[in-house]
Image (cartoon, rainbow, N blue to C red; front, side, top):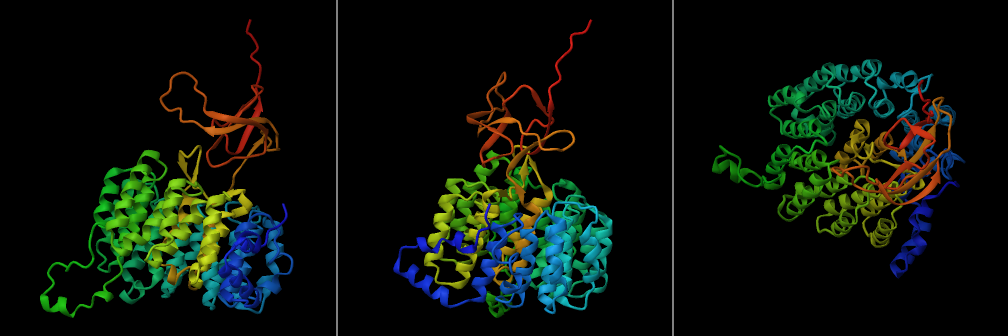
Length: 569
């Protein structure tokens, strides 16, 4: 497939209003840094894994220098996304940028090394060979890029040599930004392992950190890293929850909510959802217990701490309910109530929670609701709804969402809104419609922990868009690389050589509790593998001559010829 340019995705020429035509003309004349940054991300997402694009692989230097500072970092790192899973060619392409005179370009190349190695293991293992030396670099941006790159490259691997490389950040660094991102990387690497050594490192840093450092926007990643460590492990996180109660800063409440919801992720636990709803029902303007009238008068309401734990609780509700259809449906009604009666912190998280219930799964009811929320009076709710549209349609090329995003881009007067719309368009056309970021597999019955961890990282960034994606931390969007998987069904023989077989692909039918051998698909067509599976599609073998080693046909499946039964005697 030919590489696509950002303009192929924007389709600005389809705008038919006078305002749209005027903005197109002015856009050609003004080469804005924010627009170039958006084009970098769109280009990276759309051409992800194709090893060829029109901005970076042809003449990367020309595009690099159309960006400034962190934009250069994002542009250099986008090479990792474009060359993803092709480690040898990717490293050759990225290598020249490691020797650049620009610190931001070198940092972007470090990040690209992590992205290109995401979800694959190469015999030479380049990330652990090249990145640890930069973790203790004197340059802050090099340190940050190397820390994030290690988390992306080794997500879910639980490797102790990576822990050894990241430990010095906790022992010798007092920079909260570095510590928070190292926590996040360790959470992704050891996701769902309950590794006590990592847990004690993070907890100790939380207890020792000053109040001023815990006020920083990045500090919420400490709680998320801790939550990912206990992801899906239920009550094994209880001891850490008790430890968090000893921290007096409000961040302990946010960390506790994150840890508890991550521990019960995708379980459908009704009691946990109920507990989170109680937190969402709190009204932050009520006077705190034991507060004297004089102190109440002296308190200036706008300076009250943000209720980040309420935002975390809303996402937690979706996280616990996701993967279970009945629970997800019930949760949708709950979110309607939160939108009507919730505090601003609660309302702002609802679009992200709705998206989490349907990642890469465009449900028309939710798309309509998101479309309404994109015009909300609260700017943060509107921006999160736009991001949510991108996540719901990620990798599906859904025409309805594409039309909605084009309309939003056409009428966007605020640069921030336009930037977020562009990001959503890039996500929608992820891998030209051939990739997905859905964390579920095996017919949506199992959750991929590293994939869910990367999605949660992105969602937590979106809780404070102004200080993350819209500021200098936009490169954290590349964490989504850990969740990207092809939507193809490949059949291979026992030697892992491609073996084309006939399969029937049709719409999945629920067969739970039905007697006999009911049909699992309806309205099917017969194809020869490899074949692209849609959101609601399910495949089954069309021939009795071959036997699949897996009862669910998705991803890479080993098949072998069915042995004929030889009668005994």
